[in-house]
Image (cartoon, rainbow, N blue to C red):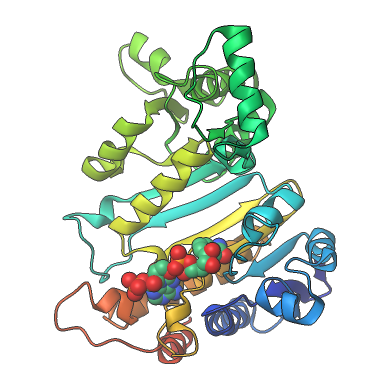
Length: 392
Ligand code: NAP
């Protein structure tokens, strides 16, 4: 990726508020890199097409050239995309993840001082959610009520297994494989070890869905036993050894999803890295983000082997498009994750500290100020300028 001292990074500005927050993220990423490297490393952005802009220019919502370009460069920064209504594509974001096999959704959630929050101690939240991206309900294997396929499957279940499903049912399939579960959990454990995090929690609904969610938990423990037995211990082992975690070891535990949802609100500081199947992680990541200020401030990345897309986790917020009010923090912080991924750890730190000190002085966009009292909102451009002026 690094050519001499210039990094070439493909970028999709996105639809709706996408172009505004992309411009904000790009200028703050460039400025942070300049501060951290004394200008010795620069970025050339390579704009690529997806979403409405791609459809207008090429008649295709997700051109093959876009997917090929990201694969070739191994990285991209992406704004939010409109999901085409009534097209053949269920979701462009899901299509991109599947095309590039971006199997881990990585969502760090932490608190920034000064941001209004609905909970009493938001600073206790500091988790990173690794969510499986390719299976479970996101495979989108569904049949409409009354369709010939639904009828055939209902009849098959009745005649072959004596399972009665009401004839007026829609059907969905929830596949979860050992391979995909283990590679997601492996990436969570490797991350936790590298970042010296204290634990990885497998979140599942295995008490009810034993052969999908329950298997996810079992495969997780199996993986730890086979691949990480020198660096990690399970909660059961710790308990049977008197409750003390051996020094320097990563703790692996598991929680049933409904219990996890209440514990992440009541005792968030007991959790660090969460590894989840697709649907649990989808809900959990937004529920965690809500505690620290909402989606406007939540970064994310979709990561596969040798390729990673860093993106805003919110959508196109069309009612705010072109109004200079959208919060650019999500994409800026995703940009910081990208810098770290590219080995520019100092620049990532400069950018996160710049955002943090801006927010701590009460300078923030309307989605955050409206949660507090007597706060005046900054527009997207002013907020970005304030961040850039605090980079050091
Ligand atoms: P959304 O675009 O995330 O917007 C929902 C609400 O979240 C907005 O109305 C606004 O809340 C708030 N919001 C989101 N981003 C914000 C920002 N940067 N600054 C301030 N407020 C922000 O979700 P949606 O309305 O369900 O979806 C709109 C389109 O985006 C759809 O086409 C959807 O498919 C797509 N989408 C794309 C992605 C993606 O590309 N990753 C993700 C989700 C949705 P208030 O109204 O309360 O102010």
